[in-house]
Length: 238
Image 1 (cartoon, rainbow, N blue to C red):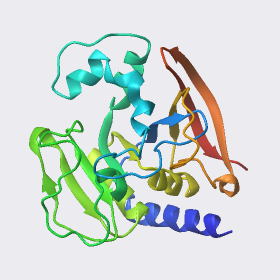
Image 2 (image 1 turned 180 degrees about the vertical axis):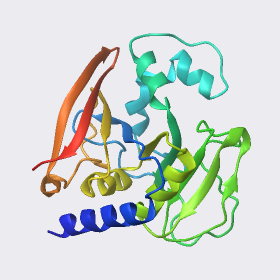
Image 3 (image 1 turned 30 degrees about the vertical axis):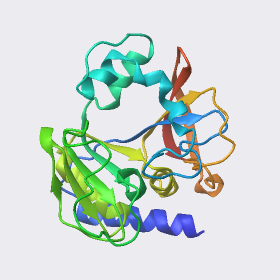
Image 4 (image 1 turned 90 degrees about the horizontal axis):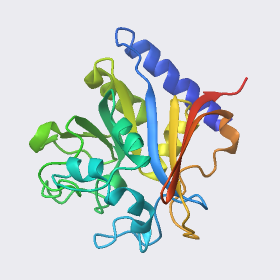
């Protein structure tokens, strides 16, 4: 019942405050281990995805499309290339959780931490960071600006939709942010890249969602080296 009430409250907020904004789709695109984790235990500055968590993304590191967005040359092309290209297709804004933005917890000591991505993050659009501790927006090279949202997911989505100007909004992670948006019924499309890795523990993006009443309709499966990409349309059950 608590999830249903939260969903209704979020929906009412968006309807009453967002009437003139074109309703874009809300999409999630994540890589997950075959046992359901998107990060390994013991995340830290040295291990941003936890100890052993980088194994989840080995399928993408060598792709030409990935290397290009990170200012590198070379790389290969395979069935995953299409999926990587589609990730930011028609996306006008990104939302992420505080833990995905960086390892600092609690109050910000200063504004020196600007994310994991150096001076030119790969987003090139507004990024809204969910946090309990406010700080000034942080413009970066290449068109990325990090905005810090302290009043919840509905407010973050409203601001992201305004910034996206009719384009889609991508929920990038981490696991807690993904669970919140799914539980609130605010997601239209879920893209899972599942790798044959067993982590055994860590962060589960789809955990504790049994009461959310979600229905997933499989739309596409792409078999690629070291990964299977599955796209689902997401809706609430009747």
